[in-house]
Image 1 (tube, rainbow, N blue to C red):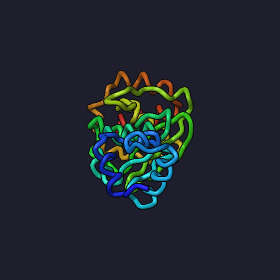
Image 2: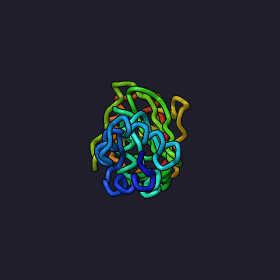
Image 3: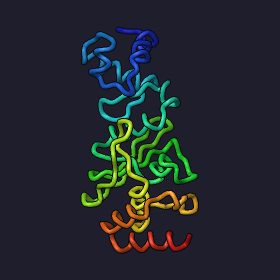
Image 4: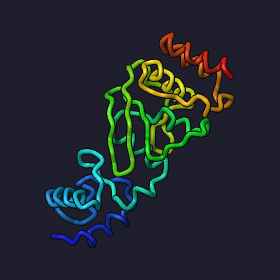
Length: 200
């Protein structure tokens, strides 16, 4: 078979963010069956980190991943989904709270968590009519700062999220967009928004 140390060099030089067994087969010039075995073996040895079925990362590259790469992976792990909550608020520069190791996202499909070494990808399921207010930026989908705030408030109202209101700079939000978006939410979410706005 192939030596693990020798095999990792072409993967590192490929410039890919992640690898499927098909990618591994193409890069190393081996069959897909061999690539599946190799992928499992490398994951067991800690050379590769398995994100989900047939999606791998190089362990050595995880610490060097930037925000845009982490967000792309978040979208990939759970499709469809968009980055939201404090993760999106930090990206938009409207909060002092930053958590690189945790990427929070919204999905209309399911709630769940995916662990990849020191990284945690967290997904909260939202009803289809509230799955809006996001855009594609730099190859990933992310909520606008207004929608991210409302997602926080919505799940706070359900007792499923704790929002650090004091970390927010509300002057950076669009009052027009907040008013437009919150009209689609429940009265409870609307009340929570009114409360934090009136408290400033």
